[in-house]
Length: 237
Image (cartoon, rainbow, N blue to C red; front, side):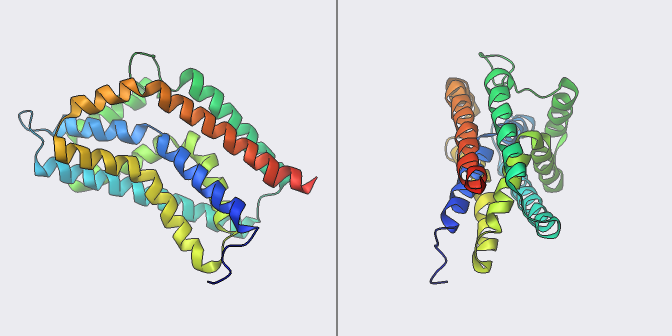
């Protein structure tokens, strides 16, 4: 453990951190958690049962991210590490995702409605309003992760490859740290609602912060793409 921080480890840690922070900016999980509150509040008051449902939802998100990332690590171990061509392709995908996020992630500048196809959005809305036990809330959290996998998969692949560059002692810590960072906005949201009990304030904050969150995600995708090009592509040329 004494020599865990090497020159080769630092780029991997940066990739894991950037990928996790970008994954945390995705808004479908937060949107589903808000729908879950709306569908479960009792006479306009948030009950302990509703808070438990949201806690189960967050657990579903966290475990789904952890299992997906572990599965990707397993595939990389068995199929071989990524080469320069794979990293270049992932960097190009990140640039495309940045452009899509800038132009289409939110359906309207005046609302928090996301890019999802309407049948998918209606299905998630219906499930959130019908959820009445912890198992259903947990499964809804899992579904929200898969609902935005098109944005998250390149990040998970990059993070998985980076985790495998760490020492054996740190690999599990890297998996756990990535998952915790991803659910951190949901945990903060859950604690805010528990203390203040005001969904309207959270929604207003989301609307006010929409451009900031969008530009943060776009910048993050571009920065990560540039980092990948410099440290994972050009070093082999």
